[in-house]
Image (cartoon, rainbow, N blue to C red; front, side, top):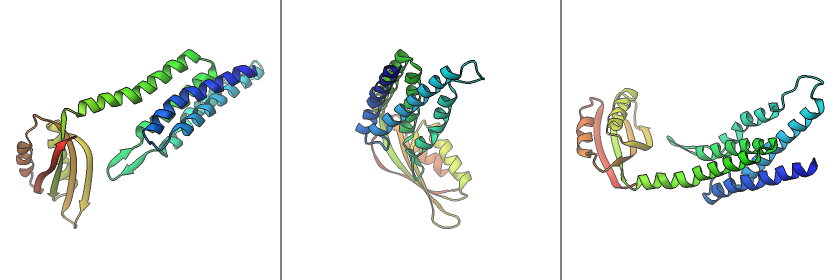
Amino acid sequence: MWYETLLKLFLAILLSGIIGYEREHKNRPAGLRTHVLVCVGAAIVQVTSLEFYGQVMGNYASDPFRLGAQVISGIGFLGAGTIIKEGNSIKGLTTAASLWAVACIGITVGTGLYKEAVFSTLAVYGSLKFLRMLERWQLKHKRAVTLELEILNGKATISQVLQIVTEYHMNIVYMMVKNTDSHIFKIELTLSYNEDVSLADIIEELAMISGVRNAEFEREGRY
C-alpha cells in the first residue's frame, strides 16, 4: 500500500539522518544529505523490486533481491569518492564504510524489516561515536615521534627499517619518502608508541643496517 511506502521512506530518512548527522558533525566529505539520499534511494529500489516481484510472481522466474544486490555493489563508486590519499596516508575509509552501511539499512527498510533496520542504525552510530572515543582513550597512553632517515638501496632498506619499527610495537601514523637523487632516499615516519619503548635502542638497531646513512628522532610529544 502507498502509506506503507511512505512509512518506509520516512524511516529511511530518519535512520540515515542519524548516521549522516554524525558524519556532518565531523566535517566529513559525505554528510547528512549524502547519507539520506543513499538510504532513501536504496529503500525505494527495494520497494520497487518487491512490488514488481509481487506482480509477476508465478509468471516467470524473478529474484526480489536482485536490484538490492546491485545497490550494495554499486555504492562502491560513491564511497571511493570520499577516500582521499595524502602522501602515504589515506582518509575517508570510515565515511565510505558508513555510506555502504546506510545503503544496506535502506534495503532493510525497503524490505520491511523495521526492527532490524533500527538495531543496525544504532550499531553503526555506536561504532562511529563510541569506538572513536575508545581510540582516543587508548592514544592518551601513547607518545608520538617523528623518525627521519637517509637511506641507500631503496626498498630493501625501507623494508628493514619498517621491520625494526614493528618489532618495537610502534604504529605508523604517517610515512613520506623523498628521492633526493638516484641513490639517496629521505624517509619521514610519524610513529605512535607506548612509553616503555626505548628510542635509543631503536636508533642503535637502525644504525646497524648497512643502507642507513642517518637516523634521528624529532618532535617527540603526546599523540
